[in-house]
Length: 302
Image (cartoon, rainbow, N blue to C red; front, side):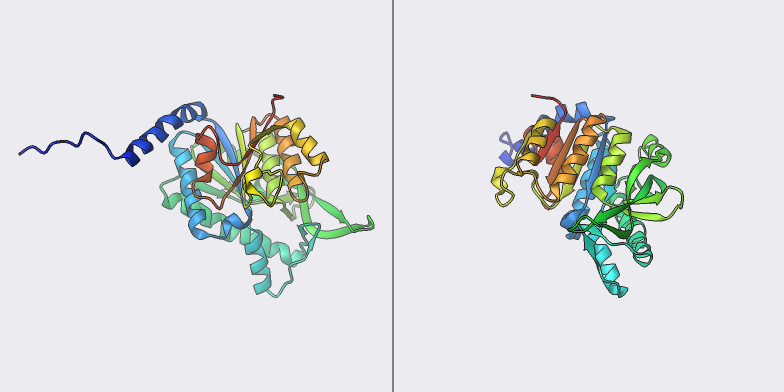
């Protein structure tokens, strides 16, 4: 006896199909395009969320996009330093990085976190290669200032002044996702430098010019009221972002992130996004849905 096929499909299955159809235009427009993803903050604390994000990056690969990943790892570094008997000290949000500390920073970022992320992507069926940031970023040491404006030496901490792209471009040509740690090689000495991951990602974006630079952290995006997620700013342009900084609406640690985002836009990146990595599939929702899930900063003046 031939069973009768059910005419009415389950509503949930129809909804899934509609989502795929809605995402089709974005899949087509981003095929063969590069997206640069910076991942860090407490969004890295939950191993299951990290695995989910790595799997979503593999989904981007499968859809024909070319992802590049720059990761952080501050909490893991602090834990490793404590285990080694070193105290974690910060000046204006930057980690004081002694010669002893830089060894731990390098081992943690390039020796533990980086290969762990690569393994997660490979376990999900993707292609990834870990690249130490010292093989990509060229840097110079920076000094900080105390409350009186006096210079403070914070050790092996630097900023990116250039990028060596050969290994990144080789991986992309083979359709392999490069996963890069935020370390730089100091110009002149070849010493490793600890670099802020947000600024490293923005510096790399200025060179690679991806269609999107996406910052994934532990905040929903830019908000008019940081204590109220319902005040999230969905989309602004460069001028509006500067205006919000002047008004103090964008403040504190978000200022260098937004300034680096604007620098990337000025260099040719089309859009910069700030999204919350604590939410499942936040990356896919931001790229493949019309409303997105975080904040985008665009070049165009509306």
